[in-house]
Length: 494
Image 1 (tube, one colour):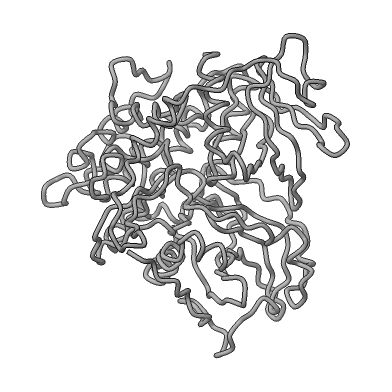
Image 2 (image 1 turned 90 degrees about the horizontal axis):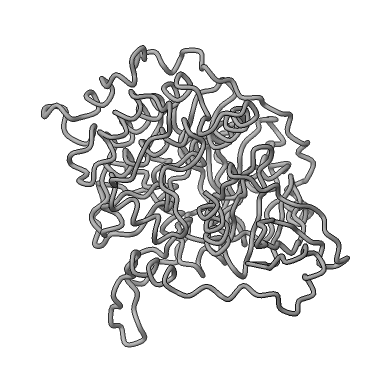
């Protein structure tokens, strides 16, 4: 089916109070990039006449139309307009100009939940502890708040479909807010076909089998997050995407074991949710049948949680809120466009695999949907290129008997700016990055068994180490090739 290319109008959004005046980029001073999503960049901004600070999601129209992502933008705006809850990021208003779409949203200064997991994992590693991250008290509190948000969303007919730590934000007081509804599903709408939505490590088995997405897929992701928060790594992670999917489809496998010392109350809750049939998962049924949200909230994992007052209680984790750089790029000029704020917006579905969408050929015949598992299987079955020492200008940076397993030109982002670097994965293994202009090694990403990789989009990925997160983007190879290559070395080392 041909996707409509119509984009949201420039009218104000659900929470606007602009006195009839349509906002524009000229009303703002723009600052640092806060994050990069599937097909947008989120920028810190300050409104000139009020001094109010926001997180502005900026999307380039040309890319959105070209990559057929209009429906994702429309869905996110629709969901934000439909919902209103303290545990969900607020959209204040939207507008557009000739080239960009803007969503002016609540600024959450506490960062992503993934930042908390990474920080706590680093602290445990420094103490010599393996497979440890957040305390049970912190996990219980944050998961309880996510449950409150999910119960509200599901009662409103909204399924998130891409729940993961990167899409959970923290406010200064340490309470969570869910964001990123581009791949959400509105159950009040008629759906002619299923669409693959989610991130490999958090996708539910029924979605992989091309079955209808329900609230069960959000609860599956919730259980995966409990594991990651406690252990510091994803529950499902294999040498490549296909094997990760197989782990999900075959869970619980005979060889699966929780790490030593894993809280029994947490493993019991996870086991009651990570069930292949979504109807049998704790919390996915009706209240009158005894398997609704009240049954989920009654699990012993949530002992001590006061569900009526949790939103006003003191959080067991208060994030360190660093002062943001000044918002000194004037939206009334074009300077901010060239300050590393909204240039080179990379558009992708935000998914690890291509979405299962209908497409039409020139003869107007409908193509068969993409089989997510088969695509992943074929990628995994393809023989890897031989790793041999060939003539290469990068050989000068190798150690004796060291080989290049993968290399590519990437953008390495630190703060507001990005720099071009040649990233090289070697057989040692090492991850080194080179200034390709001056042909000098600029640094090395410290390799350890605690290193892991997170997909941010089809081109962007993060390499997470105990002491730092490296934000990388490869427009040629894409994120998946790097993730598979690095995970392959990690798994073999284990």
